[in-house]
Image 1 (cartoon, rainbow, N blue to C red):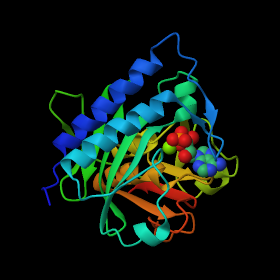
Image 2: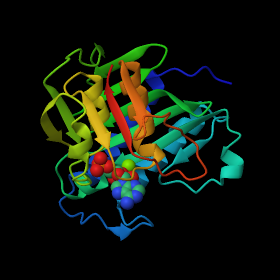
Image 3: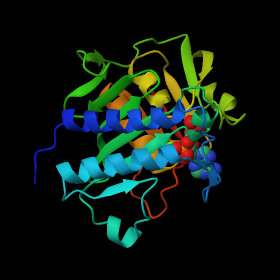
Image 4: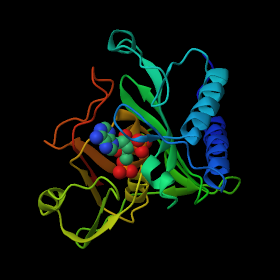
Length: 254
Ligand SMILES: Nc1ncnc2c1ncn2[C@@H]1O[C@H](COP(=O)(O)O)[C@@H](OP(=O)(O)O)[C@H]1O
Ligand SMILES: [Mg+2]
């Protein structure tokens, strides 16, 4: 097996993000929206990003399987025995992409024994990469520039909560009362985990549904920067479940 290192994966994420941007900035594109099973919009950009990531990851690591939102469904009976796999969301924040507000990301996570151990998130519009591994910590980088190490906030009071722009649940406010929250901000996509990782917000509570590929890379980056990820009952947050639908969760500083 080839040694797994982060830099070539960063290049794949940036290449995928640039392909997304070509669609995003094309004024002739009406995004060819079709309905997926969960009714979220599917665009040409999702598919282009998926193809680049699949090609890139399988060329680098032909022996590591890929579970992608845009890939074929893999039966639980097969994936349950994977010791290592990539969990990929080629374009997270499709609603934000369609609304052209820039809040979408490319997400690649390495899963070892069903835990996110490495994560890469690229925001094509911001042209910023967040990445991290449990071994080496988390970083923020403009492609081609030097990476900056990032850490969660050490703030004990005056917390900022971060939540979904398009899928917030009114009951989230209630649960957030157990944290010292003073402010609330909303943003689309896995950027929420990155903002926790760089200490600009302290808690992300999500009541409503997400899929495993929405959280895997973000969890790896946030946890590698010092955050805690728990399910909504404060238990362990599991991956590679028979259903890839996530329960509610908390991701918070410390
Ligand atoms: N009813 C539902 N069932 C499953 N996942 C849902 C969902 N509604 C939203 N999501 C997930 O929430 C993600 C968006 O989160 P956010 O609102 O934080 O940006 C979506 O990612 P995609 O945009 O990649 O489809 C989608 O996977
Ligand atoms: Mg997603």
